[in-house]
Amino acid sequence: MDDQMDDEIEFNVQTFVPAELDYVRDSLTRGHASANGAYSRQVRQLLQAETGAAEVLLTTSCTAALELSAMLLDLQPGDTVIVPSFSFTTTALAFVRQGARLLFCDIEPRTLGLDPRHVAELLADPVHGPTVRAVVVVHYAGIACDVAGIREALAERPDVALVEDNAHGLFGRWRGEPLGSLGRFSTLSFHETKNISCGEGGALVLNDPADVARSWVHYDKGTDRQAFLQGQVDKYSWRDTGSSFGLADPLAAILLAQVEERDVIQGRRRAVFERYLSGLSPHADALGLALPDVPEDREPAYHLFHVLLPEAERRGEVIEAMKARGVPTAFHYVPLHDSDGGRLFSAAPGECPTSTDVSARLLRLPFHQELEASDCDRVVAALADVLSGM
Ligand SMILES: *Cc1c(COP(=O)(O)O)cnc(C)c1O
Image (tube, rainbow, N blue to C red):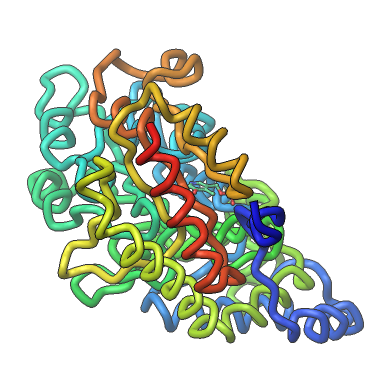
């Protein structure tokens, strides 16, 4: 082993830009550290310009934004929500907390996004189809799902809301349209593992102006405080259900510094993605490796880099062998339909075979904006070496 082999490559490094420190210091001296201060307003404006949204609300997490979107759906007992089995728990849990039951949907193998054929099947079910109030999509790794297919499956059901859990997709595009602008609601995550991060944070992007006034009531502890601040009512009071969703302004200050640097951050992540792709492509067939496949009409958001191994049974060994070469790698979501929570809250048992297969074979490589080309080459060489020796 040479010296270089001894240092571990980091799997994830939280995004940091130097201006954050000045912005946070400034925000702490302004006398407004709670939600919706000066920094929040600027971040909301930038995200609104990016997505063309009617409104953007900064929240304490993507999970909180999903919960807020579930409140806006006015879910009633017996209502169901279609969610991908291959996703993070709160893509589903947020709707369960508001009283819905779940219909788990499979993914399609190309983009690992929701499979429109399975969506159509679930909607056509004579018992459960009529109970569906929303379909939640994820743009896995920041690559847009089959939006056209999903829209087609929903064409006869204008009563079913499309929700984008866009935790991976900020700054990605589908046919030129920004991810996050395609659903009635879309949610963002600023968790430390995401491209733009303030530790813990999120946003709800509202694409239908009719949702804006109510969303502020749910956001502001069930009160019409926002209408009061805008001079629309002369005092504010309790109006509806809600909670305390707002992101503190010093955290928004971190976000502003990073959103202002989005082209640099995204450019670095793109370089890592492309270096992995061009490095692995020549080996893929011989090693039986499936690489990310970006359809022509989509621009990724470069959230992560995944490969599918030929054999699920050997993944544990691959992870160990990579670790021994100083390269941490990771699997990802365990299918929700096959989890205890999923069984507890599902409206009907069902199979999601592609989710099960992909979940067992998927491996994520180190991915963050501080990886240099030489690091990427080392990861590629290690993976080719490990797999060819098996
Ligand atoms: C990260 C993530 C979440 C949760 O985000 P938080 O901000 O941690 O609540 C939800 N959905 C997906 C797809 C995610 O990747």
